[in-house]
Length: 187
Image (tube, rainbow, N blue to C red; front, side):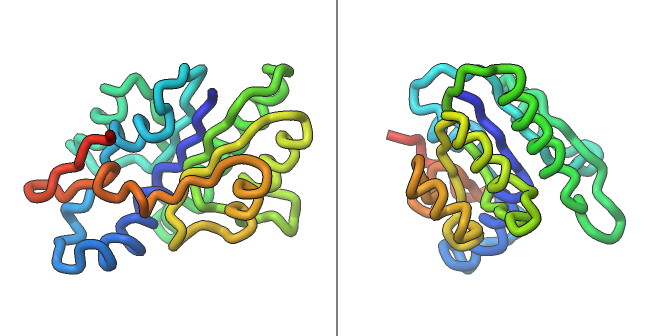
């Protein structure tokens, strides 16, 4: 199994869409994604061939990426644009890795996409367009996303031809509030 993790998409959708709904009184600056819980949810006891993880370079002295590295993941970190956040560069890094995987490994396997991004479909670009290409060659897909922020076509693709996992169902397992609520271990 191969994991493609768009950290910004997962983190900010949880922060912006789910935190106000699930914990309206919580301080947004303390909201955190619990990487181990999310990785445990995706892996579910299966062997991992590779994890592709991208996000933005955090502020200096930020312990975020140390938590990721402790899980054995080497993140692809890209600088934030001063005006447009990441300007889709993290998406492009993951999409390039996805296509290289398909070319380098001709025997199809399972790919877990941790994103909600389905942008670019009309132009034949983006995660969804690339996933459709690979599915046509026998690759299996699982999409892990927040319903509140998932592109409807990406969700339909996963539901019809693979698996769609709603992160809302695991909110307490994959998030925590620093200095307050801890993540609940998966059962």
